[in-house]
Image (cartoon, rainbow, N blue to C red):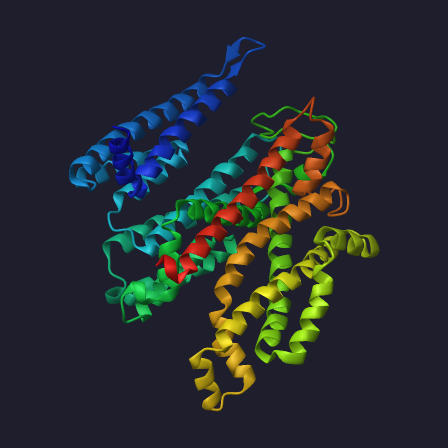
Length: 498
C-alpha cells in the first residue's frame, strides 16, 4: 500500500503545477492565520474588521487552490496529464492577485500554460520577482513617512509586471521564428529590465534571441540545454529565485525604501516588537530591522560576488599558466600558492583588516586573496587534463600560438567546475562577511549589514530575540540558496547527468 502511494506521489511530482498548487495551499493558509493574529488586539480585547476580511480572503484562496489541486490530482491519476478544463481554472487563481495573494496567482499562471517553453518559465519567474518586491515594499505604506520615490518605483514595477504578463501570453500562443520582429522587440525590453535587477527577464531575452537565430532544435543550444536541466531541479530553482529576488530587491529598494529608516536613530521607537509598521521590530537605536536587512542584502551580495569573481580571474590565470606550461613555471606558481593556502582564510582576512582598517574595499580584498589558491588548483587540474587531448594537439599543428590555445580552446572547456565552485563560494563569502562584521572586523557598525544586525541582536536574545532571529534567518537562507543553486549547476553541467 505504501509503495502504491509513493508511486502515485512520484507521478504527481513530475508536474510542476502540482508542487506549485501544494505550496499555494499551505502558504495562503499560513499567511491567513498570521493576518488573523495581527487583526486581534489581545490586550484590549478588540479586533480589526478589515484585516479579518483580508485573512478570510486568504483562507478562501487556500480552499480554491485545494479544490483545483484535487481536480489536478484526479486528472493525473486517470489520464497521466492535466485536462484543458483544469488548466482554465488557473484563470480563477490568477484573480486572487487582486488581493495580493502572489502564491495562488503564481500557481494559476503556471497552470494555464500546457507547453512551458524555457522563455515562458523565465518570464513567469521574472513576473513573480516583481510581484514579490511590490508585496515586500508595500510595508512602507504603513509608515508615517513614505519614501520620496516610492510611488514612482511601484509604478515602474507594475508596468514591467504587465509587460511580463503580455509577453507570457505571446510566448505561449506564437512561435518565435515566424514573428522575429515582435520577439526581437520583446527580447530587447526584457534585457533592459536588468536595470531593475531582474536577471530572470534578462535570461528570457537572451534565450529568445538565441532560439530565433539558431537553426537547430532548442536542445542543441548548449546554453539553453543547461538551463533546461537546471529547471528540472526544484531546489536549484528555489535557490536561484531567492538569490535573484534579493538582488532585484537590493536595486528596487533605492526607490521603494527609505534609507534613513535603516541608519538614523529614532529614540521614540526603541526596541519595538514586530508590527505592520516595523515587520521585524526595531533595534536599540530605534532603527527599522526590516529596512536594515533589505539594505544589508545589497552589501552582502556585492561583497560575496566581487570577492568570488576576483579570485576566479587571478586564480584562473595562474592555474591556466601553471597547468599548460608545467615544469618550472608550475613549480614556482604552485609553491607560492601553497604557502598562501597554508594560512587559514579567516586569520588571513583578520590580519589584512587589522592592518588596513575595516571597510568594504579591504574586506573584498581580504576575502579574495584567501580564495585564489583554491581556484588556481581547480583550474590547473582541469587544464592539465584538457591540454593532453587531441584537439589541442591539432590546434598546435595548425600553428595556433599558446595564447589562442589557452583562451579559445582550453578555458571554455574548464569553466564548468569553476562556475559550480563560484556559486558555492559566494555563499561562503557572505557567511565570512557576516562573521567578520559580528566580530567587529567587517563593515562599520552603523552601516546596515546582516552581521552587524546579528551582533546587536545577540545582546537582546532573552528580551528581544527577533533582532537576532531575522538577520540570522536571512544569512542561513542566502547560504542555502547559493548551495542549492551550486548543486543544480553541478548536475546540469555534468555530461553524465544528461
